[in-house]
Image (cartoon, rainbow, N blue to C red):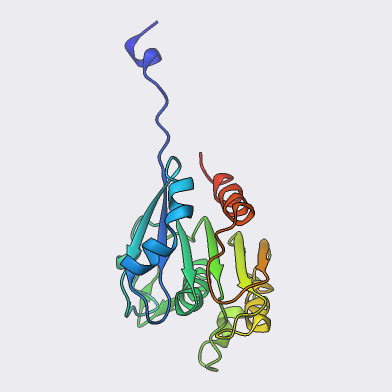
Length: 186
């Protein structure tokens, strides 16, 4: 047996890009997701960024080496847009996107861009495996908008709660999110 044979297998953690919503920042979002990030700490590293995240559709330099996305509200809108842009290898101003599509997305209270300039992003089904979370009583984003975005993804799951505009923290929700993410860990 060689030294190489005796070395333990090292599994690379998933890198999860976390996009906060309106009237939040990365510190607040990190606090709100603490129970989820703690439950996934062995398999995932979470990268929280502050908005405004002004990116041209072809500029993915801010998300290099990110494999996944999770986002809430305005962040949920952006996560859906980023999934579409990355899957379609969007080209703008002569620059082609070279970042690979996300391995998965978790989107809370997400919705589609309604500007006619961008509705083409949702014309084809998106293949990124996704978990869509929404509260039935959400007074910020109507549940129908979140369901409409979910239907754009061909491999989507949903987690709906009898609640409002928040990431659910019940033991069942934490398990659902853990199980969804764990399937992508190598």
